[in-house]
Amino acid sequence: MIDLNDIAIFAKVAQLQSFSRAAHALAMPVSTVSRRVSALEDQLGVTLLQRTTRRLSLTAQGRAYLDQCDEPLKSLYDAQNVLTRTQKQPEGPLKISAPVIFGQAPFYDLVSSFMWAYPRIEVDLSITNAFIDLIADNVDVAIRFGELQDSTLVAQRLGKSVRYLVCTPDYLNGRETPSHPDELRHHRCVLLNGRNNEAEWDLVGNGETVRVHVSGGLSAHDFQAVSAFTYRSHGIGLLPSTYCDKQIASGDLIRLLPDWSSPEIFVHAIYPSRRFVPAKLQVFLDALRAWKNPLWIPLR
Image 1 (spheres, rainbow, N blue to C red):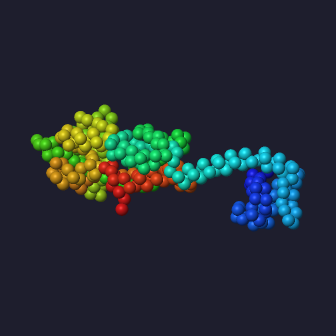
Image 2 (spheres, one colour):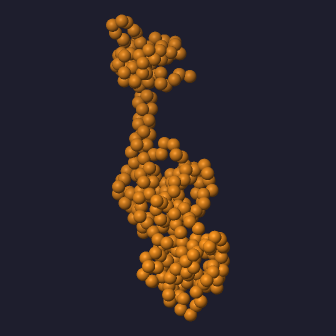
Image 3 (spheres, rainbow, N blue to C red):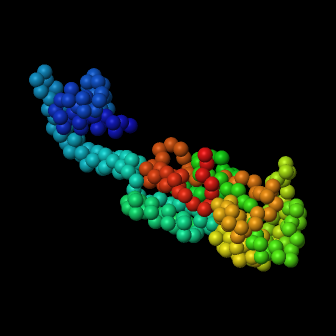
């Protein structure tokens, strides 16, 4: 099997009509260049270059061989340049998967700004809670909350989220304020991704962890909706601190069971490989890390 590198070396020698100039252009020793061309000739069983002390010239077979190899070599160089450019320049298709909770204006604003900043990147955006196999579905990056299952993927932490139990003062009118998470089962709750308007809430506090079964009149698929109906006194919400800190400070919301919260939930950007990260993915990861958003607290 002929080594394509030997053909490329021969072509460079023929182009520059000098072993020394070809060696300089290829950053190789002259002896190596000469040896590789000789090895190619031995494999082909022909003399490609006529060597004298004063000059170097192609033989008839060498000219015919170079003519046949010229276009394939150019195609290989073009293919290599395309790959090199896309690795170094932010361009080409970028397939992003994000959970349904991201399907709202702040994330769309981020993606829009990103596209204006990098017009040569073509974004394929999938907003879904379904499990996606990054390799099989050719996804460049996925954003995921919580524990990760696939240890073969690269996971880069973006931030963390902690959720508080909150309600409005109006909701508590005529109701008893819960003193322990178990008492939440007696209250109306505003749910995220509830089934049949029921859900399980995991809470930590006072050195223990509890799982509480809760129910309520409304279940939604994003925190925008959960917060909106919590703010409208439809029940107790388990909201990310970024959604309720200001309202708690202003008195519009009351934090219930302040010694209790959700466990810390980490947010990750998941992508297939740490090696040869293309520029289009790297700039998107940078944009995610810099994004000021209501979904997570930046890591310090």
